[in-house]
Length: 171
Image (cartoon, rainbow, N blue to C red; front, side):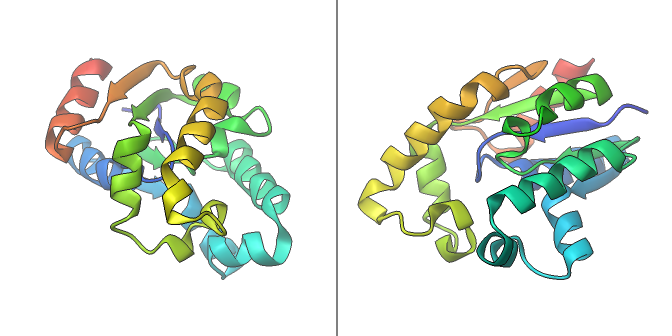
């Protein structure tokens, strides 16, 4: 495998969890673009959003998409990465794109098991508005996400089932 596999989808769609297992099965590197940005900036994504704003973060994502060698890797993108700076078109050119599609209910359920304070785009969103917020964001982003070469429905599936489906779709 030379071309990278880019996993895209909304936050909590499973990009990192699935990406690690997929990379292990394919015997390639796993790269998390959010982690690369955190390492480069030496601060958390949350801090970047608070101190520098979303545009600064989106520009940092675009820089990695343009200037990082992702060969022989499974790459977890941030949930918004495909939606800014023409990144989706660049990902499609560079490698395989896999949209991990999950419903707002599934995403809400997963997010409620995490620390919502570390999710910059959910700051100020009341818990009773979480599902509505996710539904709206998914509607805004679906245009970009659905440009992926492979669309994998993750609802009600185990991580292993999703990885098997991805591997099958790539062959």
